[in-house]
Amino acid sequence: MSKHTFKTILYEKTPDGKIAFITLNRPDRFNAINRDLPRDLRDAVKLANTDQAVHCIVLKGNGHGFCGGYDLDIYAQNAVRGETQGRSQDLSKGYDRLVDYAMMKENTDCFSELFHSHKPTIAQVHGAAVAGGSDIALCCDLVIMANARIGYPPSRVWGCPTAAMWVYRIGIEKAKRMLFTGDLISGGEAAGMGLVLKAVPEEELDETVRLLADRIVSVPQNQLWMQKQVINGLIEGPLGRSQKLAIIFDGITRNSPEGVALQELSKNRGFKAATQERDISGRSEKYQRVWKTRATMSVSSKAWTEIVPWTKKGLLGHVSQQTTVPIPHASFTKCSGILGHPLSSLLSDATVKVYLMHKQL
Image 1 (cartoon, one colour):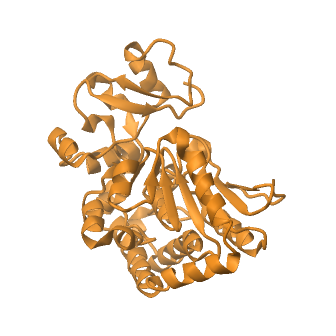
Image 2 (cartoon, rainbow, N blue to C red; image 1 turned 30 degrees about the horizontal axis):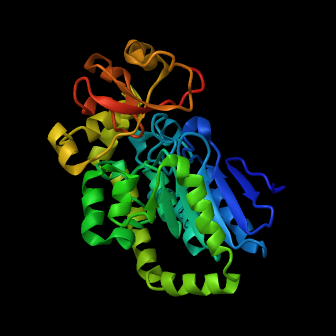
């Protein structure tokens, strides 16, 4: 165990010191990005890079998922103009474009430490990596997923993926398909389109990542560094330009008429309700069946009380368990999805996978 401590990160190494594990550690908030997490992540990557023993970095999330994006209870629901702001702004007075750009640029640079790291980086994704969480995962050299969910829902309204990694991973057409819709897809579908390296059952995720990391650390550090530089060198210039545009456009979309309307709705009804309005359009039963989009659900304590009569007996209280439960349409309004993928967008009496993410239900 490393002696170094961070506010939002756990930092550990294997006994031989060759693998550094960086764990996003805000499990009660689905490892959502707050003001400290980007800087903690950057500092942890730099720590591993300056450690002569470390050959490889593994990034993962504590709790029920990898990362649910920016903490919108801080940055949206409390009238903060945009995910990137570290201070509240009065919506009636507009926003400071330069401050917005500088803060988002810093966050993006922090995430990009994973891409620029001298040591290979592996993202180990379970649960979900959505919105800003997908930015973090896709900055890693390699991504291995469980049957999790990944996507960038804010591309519909109120966001642009500032890490700009989508096109470099899956090409122009598939990147457009994902960002024109804001859909979430499964790990298997992400692997099929080349967004991630491999998708495995969740119970095999730790071993799969560890086997790959063990194979990588058998290579001398200088060899690893040179291979990475040759490959990264192909896209570093264009990537920097794409990120600059994405950061600018991220601020614009959050302050467009549609973005401001979403912000106002968030203030009045909460961000999850606002994203229901944003994300449900066009997401018909037939669309979901043809395009195999996914919704990862979190259930509030109140909602769970409503759902209990239709759950399997004895399930209540097994917080870490993933199960499949039928949920009647009457309970849809009591449930809300991670970053705007509500149960109300599904069919009546649909069967959905529910991730229990509350310590007390």
